[in-house]
Amino acid sequence: MNQDDNSNKIGVVAATLMVAGNMMGSGVFMLPANLAAIGGVAVFGWIVTCIGAIALALTFAKLSSIDPAAGGPYAYTRQAFGDYMGYQTNLIYWLANVIGNVGLAVVGIGYLISFFPALKNPFAFALAQICVIWLFAYANMIGPKLVGRIQSVTTTLALIPIIGTAILGWFWFDGKTYMDAWNVTGKSTVSAIGMTLNFTLWAFIGVESASVSAGVVKNPKKNVPIATIGGVILAAVCYVLSSSVIMGMIPNHALANSSAPFADAARLAFGEIAGNGVAICAALGCLGSLAGWTLLVGQSAKAAADDGLFGNVFARTNSKGVPSAGLAIVAGIMTIQVLATMSPSASQQFGKIASIAVILTLLPYIYSSISIKVLGYGKLSPKDYNKSCIIGLIAAVYSMAALVTSNGNQTRWSLIFVIATIVFFSGAVTRKHELEELHETPGGFSPRWVRYTSLAIMILTLVGTFWYSVGIDKNMELKHRTNITTTTQAPDKVGSTTTQSVSIDN
Image (cartoon, helix red, strand yellow):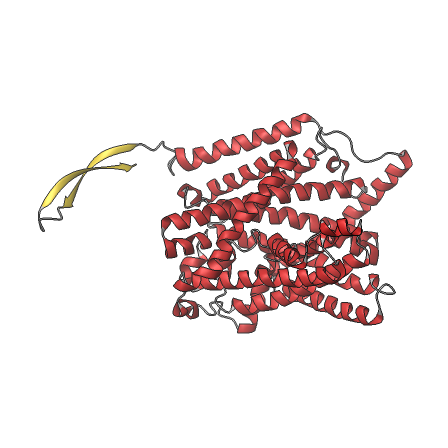
């Protein structure tokens, strides 16, 4: 029986590739454009982030081994520091994922701009994002299994431009282009490196999910840490190589304003067809990830609602067992976020969203890193305990450094929200007491109109996107094609002129 069970599990190589693939979804696609505002010195920021990511990965792997059934920053923090800290972690982590999902929509639609130039308009771009947000909310309501299959395909497509650029891009790398923009911040090297931490950590968000694979890995006590480190290093190598080579291919100013840096690099190296192919792979990869993460935030909110910590509306499910009302609320929050972060370019909007999401995620990371000292006491050997505490401390210090070097205004408002969670927690405690007194359990049925409303919003935003970007111009007038007469110089007789009719848009 043990042999049969072992035959169904994966080895260390497959586990390593799985860990790397889980992280290398969409986190890197807009980073070269954001890091262009810092310069080539960002490569040192990548190194610091890799060290921090490995420390975080090992910490979560060890926490999982202490209590495999615990699962996640919420459970670790709650066990170590009590109900309020657990509630705060859960709320912050959930909101960070909701905000981060908007970043996936930004990147996915941004890579379609080369096919639909009208999306360069910030309002049209926002409408397109809102459309895909509600599209995947609706898709999750009617078929989460199908969404999971789609995501597995799109994630594979997403890896093609990342790995391809990391390997082949060096044939077009220009050292002068790279060094001319070594540090464009106007600040010291140390300050510039600190500025990269918030962006580069985005590429490793989800590293805590690596320990989930322990149940399907042979000899997990030995192989999970190896696979975790190996997966993080493999992803890190692809991240560093691909982002660095793009900085040496595309001039800094053009890269900073790019809405699709990987597609632009492929277009420069191999031509228009290759650029379009990379853009499609990147767009599908990001949008596929958005479908899966939408399901995740809906389910995480439902889990908290089932515990009495979130409103009962998040616990209500439709006939397929999907928290459709909760998904609609998530889509609504994401819609507000899209409108609140509208920017002239995709890279600027992505930068705002990624920064906020990372700031919120850092707090659960810090709490979890410190909780190893509490949860590991008496359960680990003295040598293993001391080693784990040191690794947890490194992870916590790195997370704190990334928080300190983040955008000051965003950090301030994020921390104000964290303090405000005590108000929400008091309401959650009151609700739990009411449920206990009334002997009620959370849940119930979500009405059908929620699904139909989501479909209607998706259709309306799709029509709005088409009409605004294709059907009208700045003066709100329909575009027509007309023939006008222009005077051009004939190529065969210098100095002579010919009259030529050309068709243009007016």
